Image (cartoon, rainbow, N blue to C red):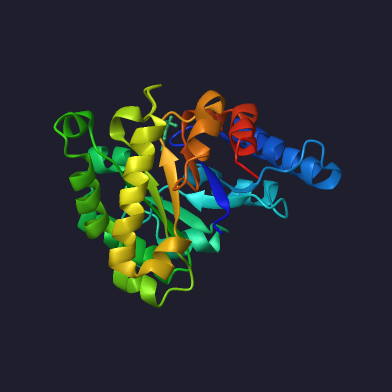
Length: 261
Ligand code: PEP
């Protein structure tokens, strides 16, 4: 049985005061729910992925709360002359357990291809992190009927199959249709379930069914309190990667609270 994961991708948002307030509010809510049970704590793991600059202060703000911390990217190399980049071991060192990789904004803004995403995922695993590998089709690809082929190609190219075999950490895969990210348009439950079922099948072929069964498949793309319950109820959806709505404590909490118990 896979426990759901609700992950907040803050993207390039948050100065220290507001970021701290957001994280502290979530930590307090979770603490209260755990202590008093009314409302009960959400039936999921919570993860926040702030900008690099906030990782250190947020690590202290959420310490002991049960909320996990993640980075939004890492470099494939262990260390070295890569100005402006962050190594996976640095994320681990600052308290991260996860790292988002291959987000469509990085694929588009930084020309990241599948091979680079896989190299980053291998580096993340080697540093003891769980990579959250993002895949998703553009609107033109969906309109051309290429969705499943695009996803299959991205999974084949980006998932660190060999490195996973000996890794202590697992993998999370996020299906994020590019046309649904930050647009307010959400994929329908039918569209999401179709892709997630195909993803699960492909991961089973690639990694074996036992390993594939353990992988959490997140949906991302304009998830909000109003649509979370329908999406999180789908058979092959094990959580959500939330962008815009993760910047409001109340919305993020309501999405988490929509996870089926
Ligand atoms: C994302 O950034 O991964 C995302 C899904 O964004 P939004 O929820 O704003 O669409």
